[in-house]
Image (tube, rainbow, N blue to C red; front, side):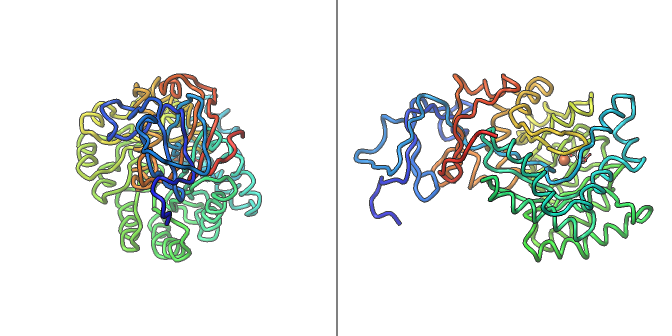
Length: 415
Ligand code: NIG
Ligand code: FE
């Protein structure tokens, strides 16, 4: 405890703040001109206009932001970045006319990455994945969600999640893990999907939970993956273990996935291109966040847009993420995703920034810890060489990040 009021560990001065907090007025960015942010014990202790700083404040470290914009550290709330190998050959096949589903049904797709991931040592997996995470973090990202799902056996699923946990320290980032055992049917269970779901529920989930490797449980509810009924079995088991759930829902067809996610009060339902209006209503009632993944939409050359107008009308929070994975979104740039969300999905730049800050935090159940610049939250911050926040979504292929702070500590920003 600090006995001296207004004696802080650090202060950021001479900054334009995009707090992303509704407490700071009607502006969609929660903007504060010539703002200041103070930090104590890794948490934000004071936010406001510099002119309104309390008298007699002191700070051990003073950061002069030189008039740059300070935002919450960005949050990539949906990735599959721990995997081995590449699927560039499948990209070439798709350019020749093969569809994602055809490649998956022929034993490629997710199963191709499962073969490469099972064959990789833990060290290889760590090295390959660290490169991707490092690139993501270089754009001011301070929290990343990482899913398993390329092991599909207990040992490899545990290895993936353990690598994800180890990456937090290596890349100076907060990592939230999701167990995605129900991602695809492994070859040794071909024709026995229910038996595999039993393995997920009765062996994998308890083992992973006991080892503290998963913060949430995800599934892929799709014709080429698992039915709504099978997904419900996984969710029931997750619930019995006290784990939060989220879902890959209605990406390629409408199996009622978003509705199912809402029925289980899921943190988020993700993709949603084929979700019905009734499912969106259910999400609104349940407080389930919509995670939109324009990288996968773009890379698969989808034409059916997610129901943005319904999501807005029902005030369902919209988050955005890279979906970083080798098959549908080999993308390590969250800023590019902001641009795609605006150009392809017609989100506003302010909606896009909310999608990778406050709404992404909510999609991870972290809204009281991250995603806004507000007292009590962790001092996860990103500093940007931009003249206005819309530039984060406007320029693509650029990285204007000039500062990145995790719980108040400066971390390198260059990949
Ligand atoms: O989010 N939809 C399922 N999972 C991934 C794709 C995984 C892969 O093709 O390797 C996704 O799009
Ligand atoms: Fe995904």
